[in-house]
Image (cartoon, rainbow, N blue to C red; front, top):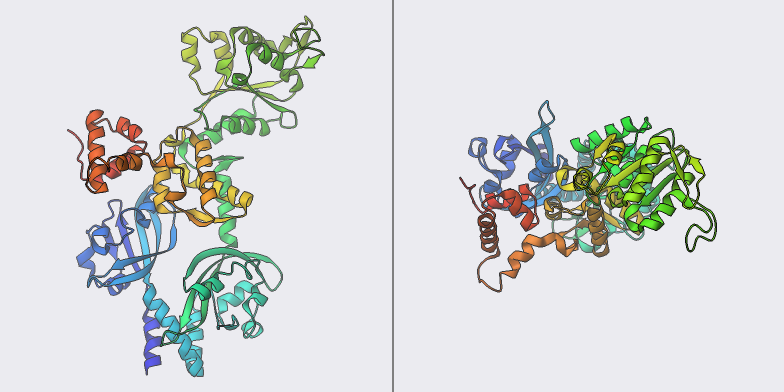
Length: 576
């Protein structure tokens, strides 16, 4: 009777589903959610989600907030929440965005289940399955209804159950695997040293969404994502482990397709600004026009120049870069146009310049605003008729090159000050690409982080899986004066301290925590809670800048949205 009741409980188990709007107010609440939390639908609809569940993750790590911010789905996030009766329960939560016809996120849907119920039921059913064939068949039916692969092992890591989905994913039948050691079946490189199931059996800690590769029966390479848990009997004794796994091949294919959509060579971004840049690169590449790329340091001007070259008909010819700010005037002139023997002290032989060497291809002049008036005159002639003379020579050389120039300055201002030739400016400015700063396209930061984590995982051999919500808030809020290059350096720094798992705030460079350090600096002066000091600092900055939130955010080293969140948190109302 007890075993029968256990099976009935499992069969009646249903996930809770809820929907919240942008203010995190609940607008839908399923029967499963009522059963798990004890709240009735009419008690929660219209209420603020964090006010009901009181999770420690509600403020900083709320998955619904992350989904609203990044637009990404979150899966299998494990938290503890409180029921209506103030009972603390563990849940597994997944979130996904709901969008309108224009693609704007209007709400977030969350699904959750009571992990205590699931773990207890799996353990009880596993014990029951040993006792009678009937119970074993019932457990098998339940396992076969699960779309993920599921298998169980005993204390010797020998397979004791292998559901239908596991058979379909791997190609092995249940008869072929039962009683065999799991590593004989999966043959993963992680089986011996980093096996997630072995880690769970040894430490008692569950593993969630650990990605690894196995080989199927046909010796095909297959990426999977696994989660593990202990199996215990009614007395709490460990009798084995259970692992669920999911075929990730289709997801990886989709990820690659999305990466192609949201990248252009090594340029990463899905924002409107970057999609516009991709379109301009494609349009400009098929022409022969001179291009002027403007943008702050670290925005990727060199990557855009390379993308234009390698998507043009000149791709088979040289792409030559010259940093105009790195060379003095005399050396820059020789570098660009070449010289003959004896043209100046040290010119011991004839030498081709960059323009001559790049004939047929592209010359990229970085920091074009730093060239001298004399070099500007010779450069103007190259742009007008593709001709020049080497230093010390009167013979005219004809070339066929495309010129792409870049600057982190505003050239028009230098023209107005008389520091840059107006006629050269107009020759350069036939096609102008203005690259956005990273703070102008913050929605691209999660995508860039994913890219850099993949790059550094391959480079270092580590297994960093992502960024924690707390660290993500810091990274999204930071103003990034050094743009993408600074972000890349920050992640490289984090890899020094983070061996695996999620990058946490303590792994990031110290300069990313400006507001927190300024608050901590006041602790020695005033004895009050940190939250009160933060509120005091924000009010102080608002008064200093006459409630100009842009200036306050810049002074604190955070974004306007980050400042607004902190103001709402401390109930600091906008000044009227």
